Image: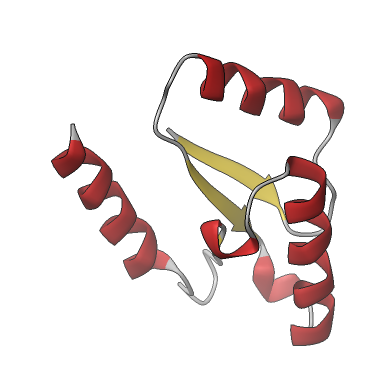
Length: 87
């Protein structure tokens, strides 16, 4: 499961419930933070920290992504391939 979160917002209650469901169901999850081109580097670092804290996941698990600049595109594909290979 590729789980998309907006970089400009902290996860909602529904987002966190969905994450709990994915974990309980044992679904491999690739967390992706989108729209990173909308934030400065400092803002992005703060938001990633806040998102990691809210979800209880390590900051390193999140892939920053921008559809505009294509940042993170290759890393997401690598994570998808690794998840499929693990299956």
